[in-house]
Amino acid sequence: MISNQQSLNLSAFMDIYDIVVPKDNMLRQINDLVDFSFVQVELQHRYCLDNGRNAVPPIRMFKYLLLKSIFDVSDADVVERSKYDMSFKYFLDMAPEDEVINSSSLTKFRKLRLKDVNLLDILIQKTMKIALEKEIIKSSAIIVDATHTKARFNQLSPKEILMQKSKLLRKSVYKIDEKMKDKFPPKT
Image 1 (cartoon, rainbow, N blue to C red):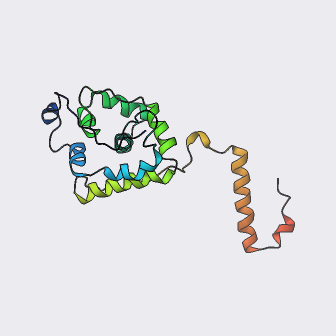
Image 2: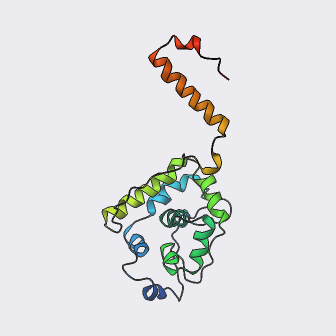
Image 3: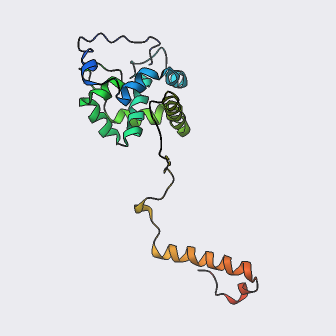
């Protein structure tokens, strides 16, 4: 269940953020300048509004994934770091003494709430666009999505490589001379 009401953090320790998270901190600037309510709007239809237990706010869950993306860490690492990194807690709109989520909640959030794989990319792109427009982030790098690249453990066997190369060789030869089809041995 997702609540329609915004929660107000009444912790006595909220002032500590003014001491330990400087005004020029990137996460503080993003949090202060970017209105993340668009996440709530985009994901609201994926939650029940009147049944079940209260869910972790979708904005906070999205911010965990955004931190994961910005700092290139695993689910477990982003949750662990949010236990002690006050800039993370500030960014997540948590009181300093608040407990963090279980890292498995991020997996469940992605699978249940972000079924459309492109939704997370759209939300992150929208956030980064806002951050770039407000000059919080000055990008000089090219970001490449490597989702569909081959990993080391997924390499082809030597036999499969030879079969691919043979196929490419045949195609190249056939482009030059179609009569060679009769002269080549049968395909394996």
